[in-house]
Length: 218
Image (cartoon, rainbow, N blue to C red; front, side, top):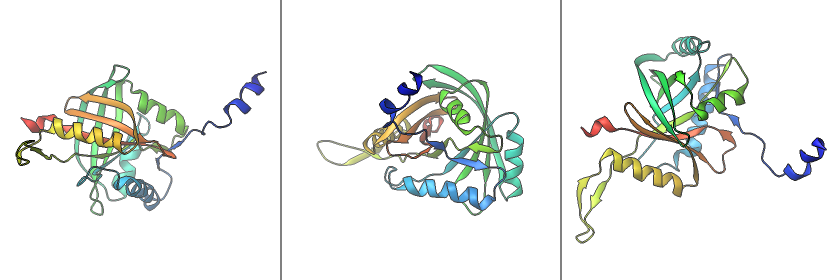
């Protein structure tokens, strides 16, 4: 009976997508190539004038130090860190996350090494469970900062004032919907707002993340 239920009726349901990952046992160039391919595949779908400026590695208490050593050994420079409290929708949960940021002279984007200290994020937890590996770290997101456009006077057709970061973020979110991205999670944090989007045709599980620092408006 159970075998019959799991066969024909579900034969058209896609298989689980494998997360984009960083393999601590693999060659650095191979890991970099995987991320740059993913960025290239989505670059044309971003809002005009936007580009990816961050990739992320999801770690836990056992893999965090290994990830940092892996990066610094391969020429990445640690330049900043932060701890944020994040409120996530649609499930209304909170988590505390620690970030360490790295840059490399050959890239125009930074690497974020993240570790959730308290609470949980459904999105990140699902990626960890899909990997089932101690040496492969999920790359949860490729991130970009929206551009601030100008408001236009509807009667005069003239640009008269720059958008706030909140308005720029709202425009980016609408763009994601127009480009056939599916919303996964929206977050409010210590520094601002961000959200995670997966493309409807994605074959690899990672998220495109528009983000804004609302403190920039002050």
